[in-house]
Image 1 (tube, rainbow, N blue to C red):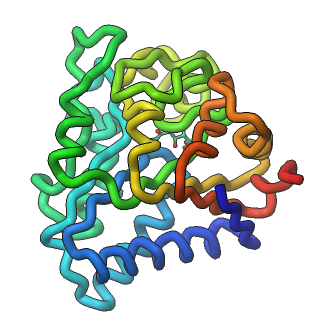
Image 2 (tube, rainbow, N blue to C red):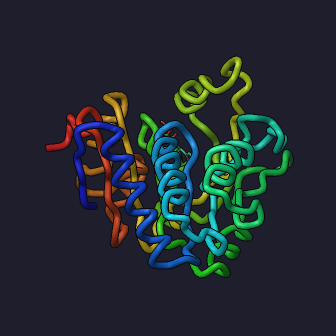
Length: 242
Ligand code: F6R
């Protein structure tokens, strides 16, 4: 893992947006893995500005979201179908058919959801996977204890993750307890991965992700097994990195 520490979130998001734009110019049919949550929102906005400014061709891109809650209808504003539509599809000016989000039927239970990995492979594999990280170190919804070789699967959210995500809902009870998520095994197959983390609440998770050796109770540490992964951190998230 390479670590880049920038003065703040704006600088870090600008570098990530530039990296994404460079990839899109170089490879107009790139396959991009997108995360939801607050962390990547500014990078998506800055990328949208660059696409407008340079009139960049986005018609051949493909996007794959990391995860989706089980139990929210697609038109619920906090379903990741809706969030990705609002933060990626519309601002970047791509067609909904270019953007894939895992299907998460109400009756899905624990276990692998392999069609999504097959779909990613059929698209040529992910060129660049964007990631955020939870306070407990989760990536996607791979909570502590998830095997590093897990494919896309149904996972159970921890109480901490539901509590953290309750800011998007009226109450914690409304945050679904289950989600379909790309596995760490899926994420490790991407050709390049970028993890962004901002703010002091993420400092422990970043320290634990970089602590040797990688261990499944610290999901972010699985990224040490990735051949090309860069962490973009602000000073606060990097505060506990040696
Ligand atoms: C989002 C996702 C999660 C978030 C993480 C951090 O698709 O899979 O792993 O990246 O929960 O969330 P924020 O960015 O809101 O702090």
